[in-house]
Amino acid sequence: EVQLVESGGGLVKPGGSLRLSCAASGFVFRDAYMNWVRQTPGKGLEWVGRIKNTNDRETTDYAAPVKGTFTISRDNSKSMLYLHMSSLTTEDTAVYYCTTLMTVATQNFDYWGPGTLVTVSS
Amino acid sequence: EIVLTQSPGTLSLSPGQRATLSCRASQSVNSNFLTWYQQKPGQAPRLLMYGTSTRATGVPDRFRGSGSGRDFTLTISRLEPEDSAVYYCQQYGSSPPMYIFGQGTKVE
Image 1: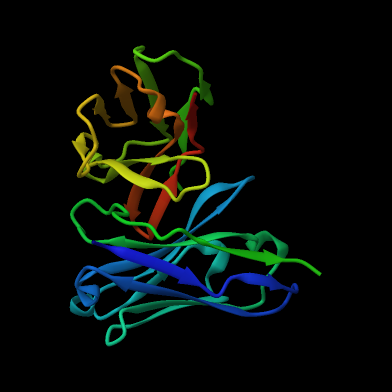
Image 2: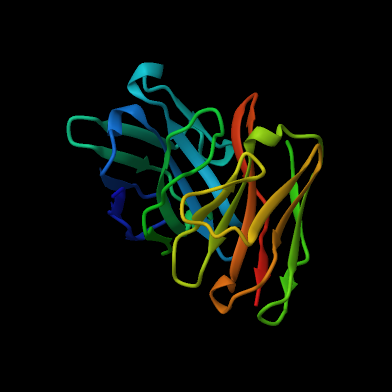
């Protein structure tokens, strides 16, 4: 059974940094593209970024609003996904989901974690 | 950048009725990359339909996806109480890589 569990969310001040983690199990982690998607009441669902699998050299892509301030990484030996967020603003307040993307041919998010809440506030 | 517009915003129906949800793209999209998700209150989204019309594992056959070009539809043929949820469409564009979501349709 595929399981994704995010952690690391919390309250952070504007301008601060935070690292989210996602523990994965139940599938061959190194073979999956992994993504972060966030959700706010106002903006709905928003893709944050992705990291490709080992076969595709673990290259990363980011949504425009977070490019340059967010970094995605993975540790295949531990089946862990990370999202390092810096220069946070109130606009980054959201529930952050870790998702798998196992089939490049259809580019959909197969499995989602329960999410972790990040609140950026002074 | 492609925009996905879902309509209606809310659909209020009774059990046994048919629900028709629309997802319109601002330009033609690849139907291989058109996906639907279901999100129930307090839960993460769940993959419902991918490649426009392929049901994900465990999705009942009362859910049907269709469409091409700019217009896509999710039909729930005989509503069950457990189908109450928000439904999102999503598409992928490759240049630059980007995943876009519609704003959702609430079915109650």
